[in-house]
Image (tube, rainbow, N blue to C red; front, side, top):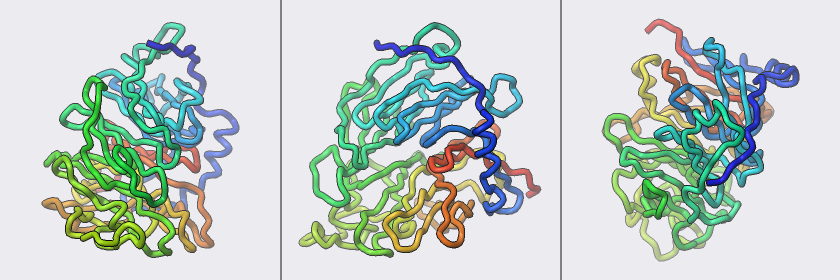
Length: 370
């Protein structure tokens, strides 16, 4: 067991953060009728995956920043007001999850576990943690993680390809299923270039994940993917095929697309889908109980695309529609002021969205009449 100095909680909103938040052009965001969006947490530079503790603590990971945040609503008014850094100078701690009272934080090469984290935050001079799992590569390229525990009690951890395009042995380009005690892993899904978001269908329990397509094949090739993996051991094509049926010019020779699992939806070229979440709350109207996907936005394209949240309607394992839910972080003239990353549903049915570009977490709520 290792320990970190306990840092005191501080007021969440500084004068600087207030000024930065007030400058965010939320009025440029378009949502369906009846929905509203607000800044829920500000001054969280490089915010990535989020998790919610049993006592309401919101945990936020970062990528390049290297910090992990804990955020509290101390006065019970439904708005966070206190924040502290519970880990600093970590190796790209983008992914985290809360499970059975413990906080799990994924660095590139290892996963930390902070046992009874919310109790630790209430007192004492140090935060104790242990290394839950340390069998991960330390490659920075596509090394940041998104993690969560599945219905089977195992921790699911993607390991991205350490390149744009290459054919490396496992565990690269896969999604791992780590044992409950952290003692080892199995490869759950193969041929996955870089997944930074996944979820299980709330009714069927089937595993779905996003995957970022390769770069340097032009503006419109390949499309990024939403994939469905109902069983262990399926191969999704990388590096041989992209978007299901586009052969890679280097690694696709002599391969057959039919040998690999195609995506259930082609999401668009270079849109960079990250977090996804099957909405299962009671607040949103029935037609919005689909899979929300954060499109982080393109870099390898002459004209930007993405920078939005879309929703996939999933019926009988098939995507029947894929429509915009929130747009406006990308403005005319290719002006970008925000990049959505991950999604988290609160107990009241509202939806949190992290933004690593604006350094905030938004809250989306529905107040309209059905």
